[in-house]
Length: 157
Image (tube, rainbow, N blue to C red; front, top):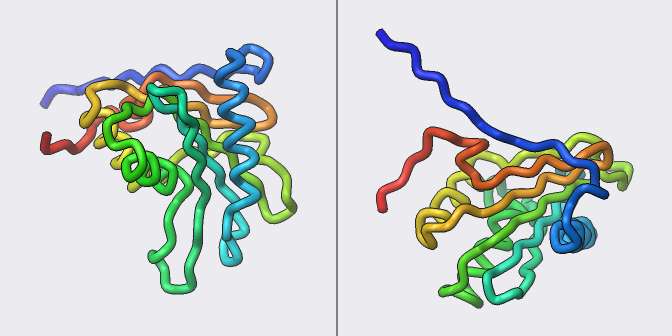
């Protein structure tokens, strides 16, 4: 048996180290948390993605008593972009989370498995990695594609 080592590169940046465009996208994701409907988890997630044409598409989680009928912030933004701008690649995605006290998390939250899979499909579809910004008040994780979070991925295309 051979050992297989996989390497991921994830940067930890102070908010001030980010570009203006990255900071703006994070601010949009933070604003989207206020549109979240999370009466069960009290975990308010906001997302904002930047398309190649310059359009920013927001998303937020929407919960439902009939689990899993709700949708995550990342997928709501990605699916809205696909419905409105089907030919536009996603260049960047920012995610922010507020807790039950209404405070943004100090540590960044990472996308769930289904959201990671949708990001893989998005990157595969457009043959372009999506820069991902996971916001936390202490620092922001920055990665150049979902494969940094999920190096072994499932695709059929």
